[in-house]
Image 1 (tube, rainbow, N blue to C red):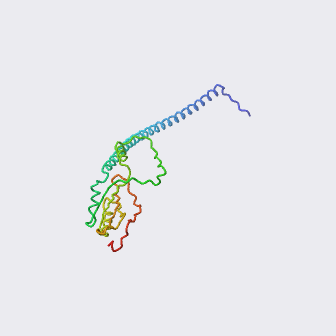
Image 2 (image 1 turned 90 degrees about the horizontal axis):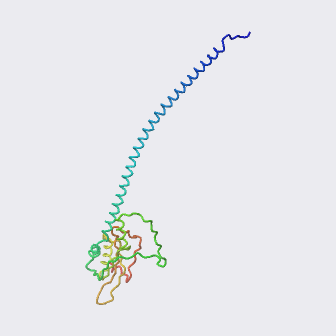
Image 3 (image 1 turned 60 degrees about the horizontal axis):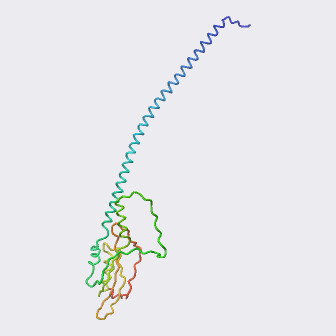
Length: 245
């Protein structure tokens, strides 16, 4: 049996419009609620980011201040080191009177010195035929004035080792060897070696002529000596065991 709709079409039209209106209002409400939630979330996220940014800026400021302070301390340390190095060099070399005291004070009465000289020996070139390669010159950089003065002083003095050469005669060979051993123990002496011992040929004089070479320790600010240099045997007449004491 077929259903018969007695309602007018206008009524059905209004019913559909009211239903559609309710759906639209519901959708608008849900959309508004979602927008409200998203806006609130974005607000709190922005506030949190602003707080983190403020903390980060404060930390950056602290780090920048510490970096600047560190740079100042490093510059101050470099200046102090340069000044200390210059002062150390100005105390160089050892006073000749101090070197002479270490050489002469332990001298026994049985030994007579004929000559004593103190000089600076230049370093030996391993192969003179081969010209030395010029060192690379670094790029010019701002330099501390103390270091500039130090370079001038070092260039004026030049490299080398302070050497003392002693010559004389003795009637007691044992005392001579003891004197050389005593020299090697002095504060400013790096090495003492007996270079030559010769018996005096004159029949009226009994004794031996000798020569001693003494290397003085590097003064303040100088490079250390090479301790591996082999000791040289004294030339001349070898002494018998009884003559050496």
